Amino acid sequence: MTASTSSSARPLLLAIATVTCVEFLENGLVIFAASQIMAGLQLRPEEFALSYTLYGVASIFMLYKHQWMVERFGYRRFILASLACFALGAILAATADGVGQFVLGRLLQGASGATFFTAGRMEMNRLPIEARFAGLLCFIGSLLGASAIAPLGAAALLGLWGWRAIFWAVVPLCLAIAVVAGPQLSTTTAAPGERSEEHWGWLLWLVLGIFGLQYTIQEIPGDIASSRGLLFAIGLASIAALSLFAWRQWQKDRPLINYRGLLQWRYLLGISLYFSGYFMIGASGFLLPIFFREGLGLPLTTSALVLSAGMAASVGAAIWHAAAARHNPRLRQFMLSGLVLFALGCFAFSQVGRLDDWRWLLLPTLLLGVAIPVFIGPVAFSTFTELPPAVFSHGYQVKNIVRQLGISSSIALSTAALQFFYAGQLKLQPEGMHPGWAQALHGLSGVNGGLISPLTLAGGEVFFWLGLAMLPVVLLVALQRIIR
Image (cartoon, rainbow, N blue to C red; front, side, top):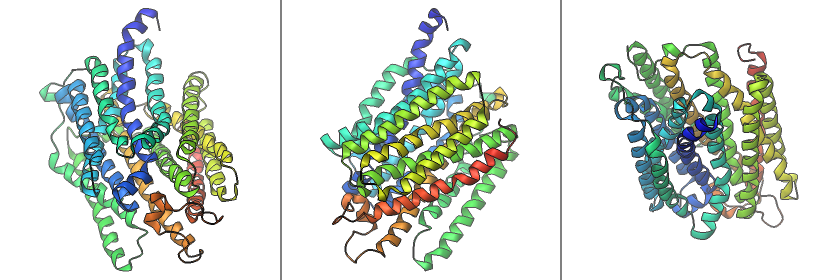
């Protein structure tokens, strides 16, 4: 990239970086502060998981409407409106005094936050060819860098002003990004005859189907036998609603997303692996702060430093892989290495009840941090290579829908698994020695009388099964012949 090109591309590179980072930073703050938020609002863990489910549903809804919005308003107006809505959601969450307003705030943040990741990636296409690799580094570095500093930022905000500051901090951030990025964003819209159709009614089926399916997953560990038949019915109805939506979209000449143009084996395999990768991100990101703070009773600053070290390793691994893959694209070997490292990290955490020094947590945390970009990087490099330009943006929308499904599903399932194993551990403890499930995640379950917390042991069991879940993904990557 020449000096003149670099100078002309720099404002757009800065816009891409700032727009991309905002949702990842906010979600990192919220995940780290999950137990404090639950305690402050007296939320049950299931209610907090529900807020993430609704966040994901709202995100997916807007990802389906992303192209529709861009065609009519252009990226500049769309992103500026999304920043305003994201800030409004943060204000509602910060001023909430119960589950209703908090969930509404997170719902607005989900709907508006869905814009940023896709917008940052699509705006990269406006860069000169010679600046595209720099754009990729800005894109990757921004999202991972925001995730890396989130634990430290959350620890500072919690220590100084409490959990509400996690949301108040987003308001000036959105304003600053609007000022910096707004003038650089595209104002291009599509001609009326080339725009996607409305589809508002059919999107209702999508929303109901996704919510019902994730609600069913979240409620699986409930021990009320009489509700299992209802949950089964909700799950079946949700699958039917999603199938009806997909079938109706398939019949459209101008669908919201052109599935027919996406029916390529490389793309379909890549999307399946994307789901696995974002499931890994969501599960580990949700479990680790709870594991460190509420299970092991580590200080806030120590937990933040360990988690940020893991995310800093992610940034380094992602940049290293982006550079290495340009010269030696051994994609399958990279993916297998990432999966093995992730499994090893999970198995190490499953034994953490035997450790007597928190410094031993650094190694498995670093393993998880390195593993995720080493696995997802090759998936990102290969998934979209054969898509024609006409459906590229549609393919990226689907990828981000899968991202939200992977993250929200992983949090719902992690909550369910943690609850299940915690209940099992409580049966092995003297009665009254440890708090119930909800109180355990409110900061009341630390080491008691020299005994290892049942929440720590339950977390170890969840990590064991998460590591074991990597086996079918390893087999899929090893046996497939599409991504080499």
